[in-house]
Amino acid sequence: GAESYIQDLLHQKEDRPEQAREEVLEEALEELDFAKTHDKIPPGMSDAFYFNRVLARLTKEKEKEEKVRERKLDSLLEATLIKEAAKEMAAKEEAAAKKGGTATTNGKSKDG
Image (cartoon, rainbow, N blue to C red; front, side):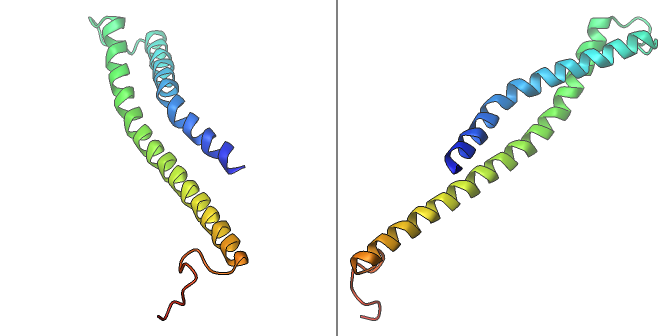
């Protein structure tokens, strides 16, 4: 249901930074490996220095992606929570109407 969906979104939000870090490291290692096998590392530059430059660039790129992803997750969470709150309100009003009166007007007529 909605509760498990909300929990899933919260877990995604929580776990994502660690996943992103792992992805960046993996990409940087792949890029280093490619550079080494194709002689793309500039002469005189150490593998470690090259790797750190690649890592810095990829981290910067990933941070932009992650901000977008986090905004989307926040929007999804917000929309889901609002939808659930609206359902709850409707259920309360329906229950109140069945008792005779509405939750919003406390049994008084709206026009005075």
